[in-house]
Image 1 (tube, rainbow, N blue to C red):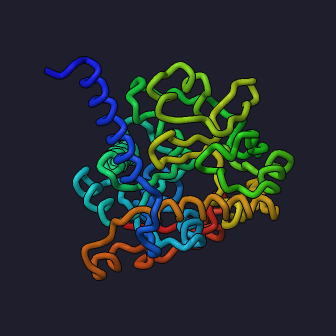
Image 2: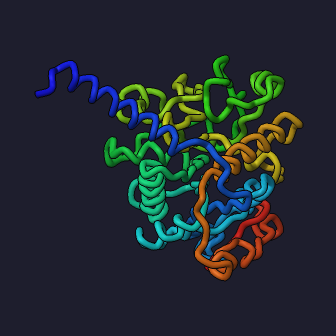
Length: 325
């Protein structure tokens, strides 16, 4: 009969083996140089642009990913869970874009949760499927934990503000900014970079008071609204390849509506390029691919053409929009 010491040593050995095996299975190793990233679509329902189509993606998100060497497919927000998971098995990551949708009951929210569940399961089984949330997509991450079935966001300063990114001193210890050039990290503290925080955001208090949320994510940067309330502007999952931001890096290079303040300084452009390069490189660690070249070609955003919005709708914040009927 084994002694308590022998049992303990055996348990310790098996635990160490499990940890090592888990780390080995998640080594960041390039699996593809042809990454394809899905962007979740949204509905035009109750918007001034609904006459142009039912489903849309801002072209700036597409360009943002393409500029770093990825291709894009739409993840339609009106698909079933099985349809969404089947598509995710063929692509290398997903971007949850910003705009306006209900965070608990909309089709956008339901499919975003399906993508999140797929990514968690993939990672737990030794695979890799990164997610980036921007704006509304950033806020969606808070709803994945069933905190309460209501909107816990707080008002930001407004829909058209800019603030410094406030990258912390320990930024090298984060996954997202570990390779950020020192000069760019310094410039981000001095130059107005963040741009377009939108009207709502996630309060730091929510993070601090919710154990499963704070166990899963770490705050990378935060800002303070006009009421003195601190909100999360950038965060990342501690284990999983999930990254999100309240600000909009895709706008710095590709949005030119003169009614909105979008920073186009050299530092802002470099930061946008850094973020897109980082996320596309994350997607290269995924080995997913389409069953055939024909299915891949049929899914790509190249099957659609963007619409130039400013002559049609001067109130549009986007220069170009893909309408996917």
